[in-house]
Structure formats: structure tokens, C-alpha cells
Amino acid sequence: MRGSGAIVLQLVLLLALWGASEAETSETSTPSENISQKTSEISRHTTREYSSTGPSSTMETFGQAEKLPFLNDTIIIQEFPKVSQTKSITLESPAELELMCSLVISNTTNVEKMETIWNSGNATINSETIRRNETHSKWCTRYTIKVRNQDQMRNYTCIYKTKPEINATFVLQVPQVHVKSEHIISYVGDSVVLTCVVGNGKTHINPRFWTWYSNNGSGEVVINSTLMPEKYSFIETHKNITKLKIFDLSELDSMSYWCKAGFLLGESKGKVSLKVLTYLTPLKPFLVIAAEVIVLVALIFIYEVFSKKKEVNTEVEKEFEQVETLKSEDSNGMETSSTRHRKV
Image (cartoon, helix red, strand yellow):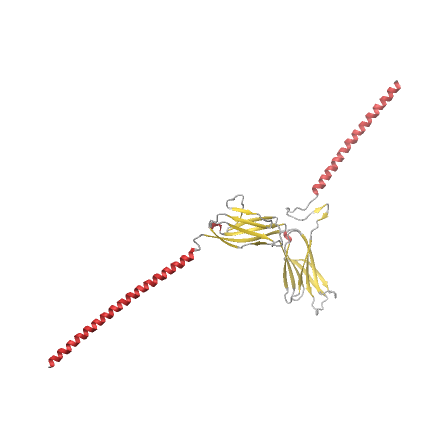
């Protein structure tokens, strides 16, 4: 019995020691698990993603550079002696852009190499020497740029160092706003709708936002239809179209209105001039003409009255002269007859 009791006691002690070792193992493993969880959370938070609402389009995901859509455009220069050409490039969002200038080589040209440079603003951004290739008929120079933000939306010019220099300019711009009617005339008390659109009937380009503001010469005032619902209303039909409706027009509403479309790479604007007239305004020319007619008729009437008076006076004078003439003739006749009687 004593032997069996000792064996049981040894088993209990072994189980207690084993439980203690398991507890220590679990306690030591918990901090490591927490550290790994925190590390994974930190890695998730430090991963940057591209956001269309962010101020910059640059990003890196898990250490890899952003992949921008690739676009290219070319200016072919062959209209001599025209030494300068320009071409506009419309960008809606960030892109990797390859610009190429291609100068047609004349058959009589024996130049073996050509010096070219690329300028942006007043700064030289690239220069190279092009060597003649018998299989090619053009001097080609390229410049590639990753357009990520508004600061890069500039003019880029390739220059061939000839005499005179030949150059071609790429003008980078965001999609342009087109105004349906640039000048609108309406009347007091009426309503009017101003419309701006981006793109054309075939191509629809959706801006990130639209903004309307007015300018009466003293400064820009943003139009908020929420604050003045009785005066302004925005009509939404398509994302590439914005319409501003103005109610109960007055002469104070005569000013310039601007619609602004916002894109990742910049903004573009359109201008509408509104002129509000009173209903008496169209009558003013008629009233002026009527007044001129009345004055002219009055002058004619006065002239006729004076003319008639003058004619009457002239007739009276003639009659008076005739009477006087008859009187003088009668008096002369009487004098002659009395003389004759005396002689007898």
C-alpha cells in the first residue's frame, strides 16, 4: 500500500510540473503573437493606395511603382519655311506621355547629325544628338514624362538647332468646357437656364466636380442653391453637363457667370454673359423715333404756317400796290383833262 501511495504521489507531482511548463509556454507565446498582429496592422496602414480625391496621383503599393496608362503623340514638321508648330493634348487623368517630334529630311540634306533640345517654360529638360540613318527619312526626337499632377501640365517644346531654329510645342491641357450660349438676353421677372458641357456628342468626359460663380466686376461669388433655393437651382442631367437656373430676374442679375469643371490634373472654365432688360427697353428706340417724328411734323407745320402768312402778306402788299397805282393813275388823268380845258 505504501508503495502504491508513493507512486500516486510521484504522478501528481509530475502532472503539476507539466501544467506549470505549459502555462509558461502560453504566457511567453502571447507577446509574440501580439507583436506579429501589430506588425501586420502597421504594414496595412503604411500601404498607400491611389485615390481620385487626393491632391497627388503618385503612389506605391507594396513597394511597386504606380502603373500609369501610356499615351503618345507626334508632331510631323514638313511645311517649310514654317519653323514653328503647336499641338494641344488633352489629359483627363494622370498618364505616362511620350512626345515625339519628327522633322522630315530633305533629299539634298547631307548633315550627318542634328542637335536637339527639349524645353519646358524657360528651362532645358533634355538634349540629345541625332545621327543620320540612311534607312530613315526623318530626324526624330522623343521625350517621355509621367504626368502626375497639375504642375506638370505645361508646354513642352522640341527645338532643332538649325538656321533658323525649328521648333514644335505640345500644349498639355485638361478637357475644355463648352458654353451652350455665351451671351443671353432676358427680361425682368423671367427665368433663364445657363448650360455648360465637357466633351461633345460622341465623347463624354465626367469632371470630378462642377462649380458655378458670378462676377459683377467687384469679385467672385460662389453660387449656393441651398442657401438661396428661391433664386438658384442646379439641374442635373448628365455628369458632363451642368445647368444653372436663375429665377425672378432683375437688372441686378446682369453680370458674368462662370462654370468651372475640376479634374485630377487641373480645372477649366466657361463664361456666360447675362443681360436683363426691362419691358420698356425695347420701346425706347420706338419712343425716340416717335419723338423725332413729332418734332419733324411740328417743324413742318410751323414752316407751313409761316409760309402761308408770308403769302398772305405778300398778296396784301400786292393789292395795296395795285390800289396805289390806280389812284396815281386816276390823279394823273384828272390833271391832264383840266389842263386841256384851260388851253381851250
